Length: 461
Image 1 (cartoon, helix red, strand yellow):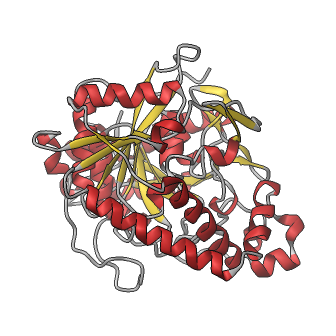
Image 2: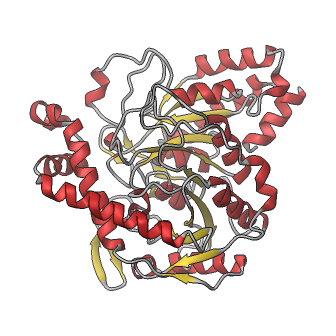
Image 3: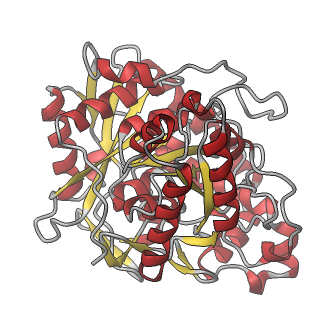
């Protein structure tokens, strides 16, 4: 069942929270040997919390009553070290309390069942983690799940839990959503507080949910909204609920497709997905942005510089304990000239101004989420429109420019766009102006209602 179906039954008393958690735990036990999405399963904690929900005198008021969920292991979980996908953090003291978003989810009645695999320190797009093993794509176990929130997307796609939380710095919610065939939301930068999460790039990090339906996504997002005075990066805006706006769908919205870079760096299946969405929404308008490649380069430089500063002491003392796929990038970031980083910030601000002008005449923009469907685990190179490109960083070709300026994005999954692999999904980014998550969710709801965007549970073949 999806999250809202579980919550409805738990509120009505036709399903106990304990039974919902037991079903989730059983599914995790049955599928984990194939998927490898979890790094910790919290059965005792989850069942204890389920018992509390079942006795809750105001259970009928809990929007996510009894819904099992799990979080990327960069979220603090009381009693566990916050791994952030690393070996080094195993030696850290256990977290003294849950991350703020975990507490908000549980305040809405959701029940935490575990922590999820990821790329080390969130620096990657594949979740081919050397320390904890690769998380496999539930729709094709030979392929990557995407990253860095690969465990978060795979757990939803495999039917282990109906909701998960992840993070997105350069595409880490949108890439795995696309490759695993689930819905994902990257809110506006600063919308959701990050208290109790392990940082990657402070000026680019976002937290957000994954789900198998748009309504589930909206309910989880709404449960996590609100100011957090102790978080300097949080915008301190009051909650702006989205779930009641979904029924309006795409009515009256001005929608356009992003051209240029967003078509040049996409394979045929990605273009087919965007074109199908545009046709379903009745739009033929094309918007061309300038300097998209420079915006992506700016995101790369800012990521390199900020993240390497955070890990500089460990790079000096414990370089051998880093994930080989990320260590060299951290080291390179530590050597970047300051002038390059300053110039990257200028490019970033210029690109943001350009998008602000675009949103004066459109409400929503469409673009592919990944250049292709999920590659085989271990793939080193991709051929994209005649260019031979390194596979792992190229998964973020189409997400990084948008991350750089903090816009809200919902990724919607489509199927059958690659004739050679019709069983694999690929996602489309539904991009809105800052603080207009509701518009992106409305368009996603329209596509779901038409049956174009769906997130079925994987067969695990």
